[in-house]
Image (cartoon, rainbow, N blue to C red; front, side, top):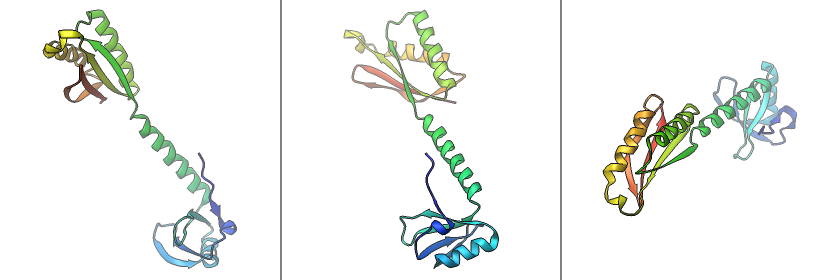
Length: 168
């Protein structure tokens, strides 16, 4: 997703708001003067924000600037990945081995830094015994305690008891 930037002579506006290589604003100057200042320092003039009024230009080394932008984009993508939500479904009468399989899946998700939504569905009259569901969810929380921790407490949503588990 490399963004195309106007650099040096390709900048076709009369005036720009200039930022120098130290990050200080130098005010609104003619593009020709800004380009001369950049050449003086042996750097490039990069149009950062062409949509602004007046457009914003920065004096910087273009190669270094592009590297920093791609690094910043990678960092942004990495932080977006943390918002992936995986769901693990349980029932109130789940068997011990089935619960351990769900715990293993939850641990795999937490190792990948995914959030987990634990949903326990109550069938028929089971909904009157919410404490049974809470015990099942607590056993799952105990199984993932080294990699994740619950975000709040389990809440009823219709016939489901729902809890979010986040990675540590």
